[in-house]
Length: 248
Image (cartoon, rainbow, N blue to C red; front, side, top):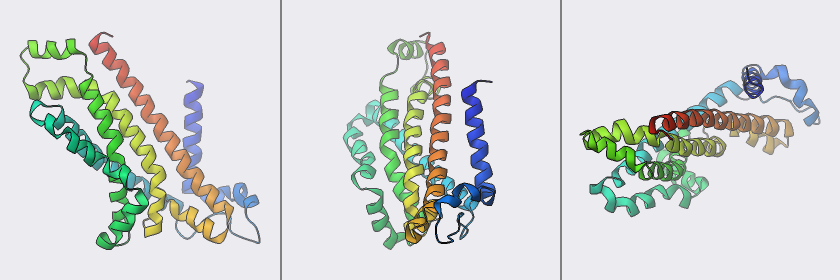
């Protein structure tokens, strides 16, 4: 087993252990407290907050991926090329309006809770996925696409059997970036009563308890790094397979 993989597994095991039994790690955070403050956040369980945090990110990323990849497919077809400027403007909406502004606009319509956070993450995650999907679908090896046409594949068959599989590593890179951004950005959802790990950080800031801030930040940061690393490994594996298929 490679040393790098061992380190990743150890970090993952520690993260799971801390989220499931945080009181076992109270001694780690106790030096960061003062005046008898609690070392571990107990208003809500870390496990519940972590699962809710990840669920919101997962749903937002899934929805953003479906729309962004769909738009990229549309504008790379002859009949949809004219919609490229419009699609790019739509994908840029999330980057134009910061998540905090989206939350402020969404709360009066959707109310407090996870819904405004989901909308903010969905919009914020569109651009990297769309641009990567567009790049992946427009930079395919000409020899491969011509060969697909030569064997009589229909447009639909070429898209599903050739273009999307070859573009998947590039698309996955955009999804990876979007997920990591969303994991960090989701913390602000706690300002509108969403159950995210931001609740721990905000509680620490309000009570001047550095232990809360540290544990919330560490969990979010560790999750982001593990997800980034895991998706990077999948991306490299797909790139190797793609290289084997195209003979490069």
